[in-house]
Length: 136
Image 1 (cartoon, rainbow, N blue to C red):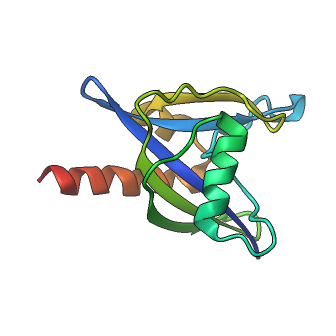
Image 2 (cartoon, helix red, strand yellow):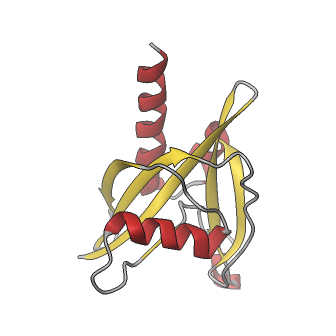
């Protein structure tokens, strides 16, 4: 099974949570869903290090403190995605830093649930639960 690793960075905007998502580039991806910035670990690279590197390479954003948000297995392919979650830096200004993405931006959690890859939606639900648990 192929393994990839990425980050789910978030920040508060007024009373809303916004998350950093990317959209894959290419005409064939015009209608493709968005996703977390992620990619394959290099030989011998730890999953969190790969997630940080991929986020920087795809969005230009340097991730701060991260905690594991578990993994999901894609339902239609043999792919496992590991996710690390953390608060986005205050000065984060995402940009398309790689040919692999044509959009990199913060979107509201509600909008993210509508546009993210269906299998990755679980990461958003876990983040939402984590934030709700912290608020209690």
